[in-house]
Image (cartoon, rainbow, N blue to C red; front, side, top):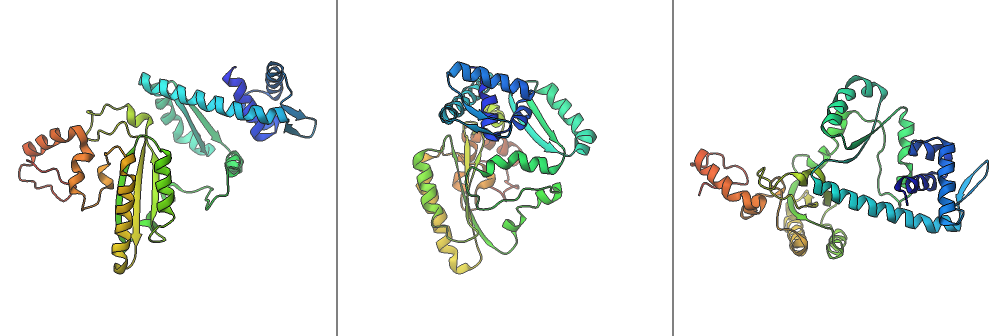
Length: 312
C-alpha cells in the first residue's frame, strides 16, 4: 500500500477537514477525495462518513487508523535505519518563521543546506502565528500537559530560558549516563526515582541523540560515543547545606540503579568534580591518544582545572 495514500488518510483522520488535510498533503481537496475513495475501494469498506458539513471516522476507519499509524511508524523506522547505514543525511526539517525572516536571511541559509543535503526535505511554514498555534493543536490531544509555553519569542529570550535553573548561590550535583535504548527496566527505574525527587528544583532529563551525531566515526573526534541514542542528565539542585547528604545520595543511588542499562560512556561536560575517575569513560578508545597529546603539548599539566587528562 502506497505510503503517500496512508499519509493522506492520516492527515484527514487527524484534522477531519478536507481543506486542512489537503493542505497538509500538498494536494487539492478534490485530489485528496479521490485518493481516499481509492483507498476505501482497496480495503473494501468506507473509512469516513462525510457530508457537506462534517467528516468523521467510521468503525472501519478507526480500526484502519491503528494499522495506518503502525505501518507509517514501521516505514519511518526502516527508512531511518537505511539512511543511517548509507551515511547520507536524509529526512525532514520543518520550520515555522515570519515572512520577513524567510525573505531576509533564511533563503541563503536554506539554499546552502539544500546543496549540501539534497535528500533532506525542507518544510517552511510562514504567516500568522495563529497558524502555528493551529498546526500544533493535535499535540495537545495526546494527554494533559503539566506546563506549556507556545508563542512568538525573541531569540535572545529563548537563549535565556533556562537561566533560572542556574542562578548563583544554589547547591548542585549532577550525574549522567548514555543509553542505546530506553528499555522497560530503565523506564521503571526513572519512574520510581522521579516519584521521590529530593527537592523541587531537581529533575531527570533525557535527551535523544542519534541521527547526524552518530554518522561521525568514533575516532574522528575526542568524543567517541557514536552508538549512544539517548543521554540522561540527573540535575539535583537545592538551597540549604543541611540537605546536602539527602540530595547527593539520591543522585548517586539513581545513577547506580540505572547503570546496568547504560553504555558506560558519558559526555565530559555532564561530569561533576568528584568524577575524575570517569574521564577515561568520557573518551573511551580515544583516551590513550589524548594522553599522548597531553604529554606532548602540556607535560607539566598546566591546563588542569577541568576533567583532567593527566600526561602520564
